[in-house]
Amino acid sequence: MAGALSGGAAAAGEVATTRAATEARHRRPIHQRAAATYVVLVFAFLFSPLVVVVVFSFNAIPRMALPITDVSLRWYQGVFGDPEVVRAIGRSALAGLATAVIAGPLGIAAALGLHGLSARTRSVLLSAVLIPIMVPGLLLAIALALYYRELLRIEYSLPAAAAGHVLIALPFVILTMNSAVAGFRFSMLEAARDLGATRWQAFTTVTLPLLRPAVLGAMLLSIAISVDEFIVSFFVAGRETTLPMLIWSRVVRGVDPSLNALATILLVVTSLLALLASRRATVSV
Amino acid sequence: MERVTKRFGSFAAVDDVSLEVVEGEFFALLGPSGCGKTTSLRMMAGFERPDAGSIALRGRDITDVPPNRRPVNLVFQHYELFPHMTVFQNVAYGLRLRGVAKREIAERVVEMLHVVRVEELAGRDARTLSGGQQQRVALARALVNRPAVLLLDEPLSALDVKLRKQMQLELKAIQHSLGTTFVYVTHDQEEALLMSDRVAIMDRGQVLQVGTPREIYERPAASFVADFVGSLSPFEVRVDGFRDGMVQMHPTPDERVAIRLPGGTITEGALLRAAVRPERIRLLAIGSVPAPTDTALHGVIEAIDYVGTLSHYRVRTALGTLLSHRLNDDPTGAPALGASVTVTWSADAAFVLPD
Image (cartoon, rainbow over all chains, first blue to last red; front, side, top):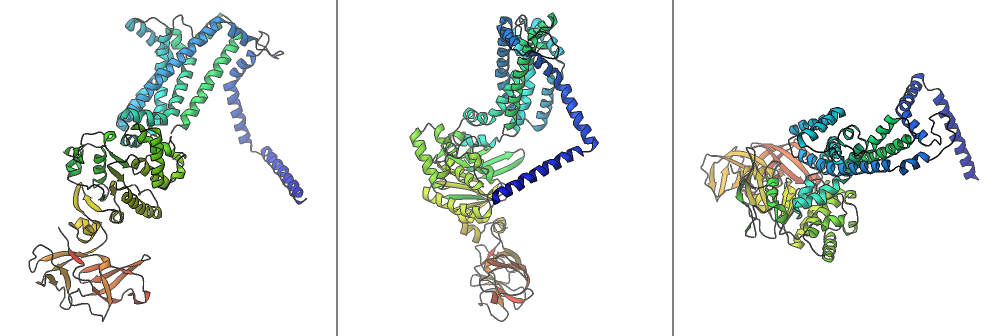
């Protein structure tokens, strides 16, 4: 009985506090409400194009107009039934994996190598690493195209594009790995050596397992960068069309509702990868 | 170690040092920070290569043998346990690399965890251990490999005082029961005296004295050693004469200072630098007469520091301020601040300070 009473009292108290909170919200000063509205507007601006694409990818009729009367997965079925699309997805996946597999180890090696240098040299080299990020993609793409054709005399192809993706992803990998390496206790390697490990064994049994979260994060990021990359691929992939290239070519041809489905797939895949990558990178030691 | 020198740039961290550690002993390298003790230890472990000289183990030159091929193990100051492994995996690490059979690894790891008394932690994540537990696991991880020499780099410095005292005794007991040679680096003189069979005192890259704790404390071979190990009251007096192997000195006519004559010759009238340990200086009430061969000085109590078991007295005398430790076992007989006392010590208590 007493329990029920006190329970009722607690519930009443709760109601009171919620009401108080609601009133407080209403009484919030104007500048705070303005700030909240502003944040909402910014997010609306950022995400409304994406929302439009995603929403219309489920529209049953090929007309991009509201209201949507019927929901369907027909565009998705169409996408996966289109051999050209499936091939493009396959190529993008291949390029993404290749980028990760190449940029990952290169980035680890670079970060570990940087660590061995003096702090001054390291900071100079790290700034140099940033330069490719700031170079306009178009410039990089044209440079690569000329480099391949005039100097290396390499045919434009998927491997050529993937090599370009490595170039773009590598600075990000090095930066991610560098912060992970900075927090790594190198004296732990001495402990391993002291216990009988060769340099290589110390690397595989201590360095690598401890840096693994950062390594995986950097590799996922590489995949996301590669899958999303358009300009370099456009210039040097030749006839081996990747997914962004295919979307581009279809957009040029005219509005096609299946593009919404395709874009949504690309959006989901790259944001998932980026999300996973940031999770990994932050839990690194 | 024979005539070993290690330079960092132009600075000689270890300067022409020769040391011999006897199999099975607990050997301490004692000195202030920057004296070269850790560098010496790291050269024994193989992490630093001497610029000159050589290091041998059981008659075999190991100067150029990499750390992973030396039959020595190091307990690091900050333990350096592998955080991605369990306690068991940490301890098993060295044995696994050596290709020891799985069953033997399990047996030896469990046995060693038992020796360091943390067998219940075997399955725990190394990250979740307390400082004291990490210390024990680090010790087990090194000892399980049955090293010819176990090197320890200030292993207790990260622990709180109480735990440190306990671990000092335990480490000593473990060393005793396993019979492994321990080389122990520390800057804590009390720790070195308590634990070691022999101590090497280092300063500025050089070894000043090697000896048993008693030799180091009672017969310091250098002023630095005398000053660094324990506390003491140094003073200077003019030599008035010799009698019965004792130096006679009279700072004032009714006072005398007694020092047993050291090996060297001392000319009459020379200025002698000597010192006495505080626990050897006794304070007598005015009126009690010291033995005729003992020191007798007038003193006034300048300060008293109460530290529990002991009280530290600072006494002003003709020789300067002397430090005297008195056991707080009888508060009624304790001299008060500002009191006049007779300061005395036996001739054996004082020693001449080497230059």
